[in-house]
Image (tube, rainbow, N blue to C red; front, side):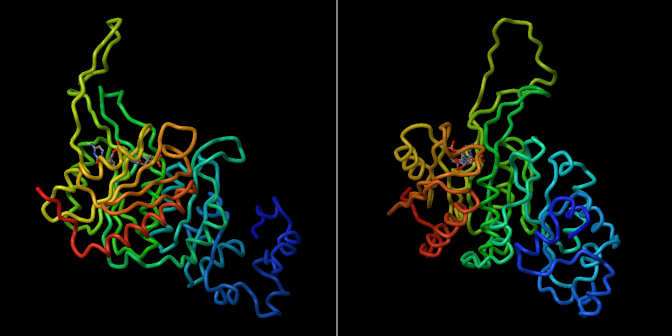
Length: 369
Ligand code: PMT
């Protein structure tokens, strides 16, 4: 425990709850006598997990400072190191914190979280420590390596369609579903996970290759850049169906009581991928406010998909910008439903099902032309 940690709870409390010995001092005659000084302690550990990791601890580690037991352990440790950040959302978003995180990642530290949500200080945003269960799941993942050796291409988040330099049309997608799928694909052993992401407030796990885009047109271009190399394409993004026919060069003035905006259809990325001659196994999503099954099946057939994951949106539960979701998945010869659960968990179920169907298909499904 650091000195700051001891301001929140006492070593005695942690000792009683964990049943383990709590170490607090860098130089302790007692610990040295038990051959458990800081060097021995670092060598003894199989894994070093720092949870919660404050902005201060992260800054210290990233600069190699070693002025207390925790930071010294980090410098000595040769085992895998994980940190689970926890701090106010503004602190997390500060460039200096992000630079420190990046330096640690470049040095092999694996970052778990943080999660978005309500914070102790009343703010809402990214900065909550990941739940202990989630931290353990990520460290000790026994996920079935069902995607071993595969390259997975995923789209996530909303797109923004510019009206003028300061205004755009968008939707409520947070990107949580797409990012959870990217994480789950990584946990399932994928050799490469490429995530084409619209504007979101999320950070992807180390090992996921993220390409940030803004508009539907940019998302289309990026997907086409990577699609030839991928085995499975999952379109979880909420891509705008329409975009302004023209983007004004200057801010539109409010000169009239009414104004009209002419929209034109965007290119359907999912349909374009499904129509490629050597297409990957192609998975779409359907976000519906009515008649979920009918519209999902229509999209499955019309867009010639291998699989479609349908969810209700615009309702009290699930869908956009929530941590939980439920899915009804359809393919040519069957269907499966997943009840409401955290998107992180749901993504693991969906990835497993996708891998199963991908492996079943000796070749991507052939449709009559
Ligand atoms: O991001 P979250 O807040 O976690 O919310 C998750 C989600 C609700 C956005 C996600 O689960 C979801 O349903 N994503 C698809 C949303 C959507 O745009 O659905 P759609 O029914 O309008 O589109 C059907 C499919 O076509 C989707 O796979 C979509 O990515 C794709 N599409 C649509 C339009 C377009 N121009 N190009 C596309 O590729």
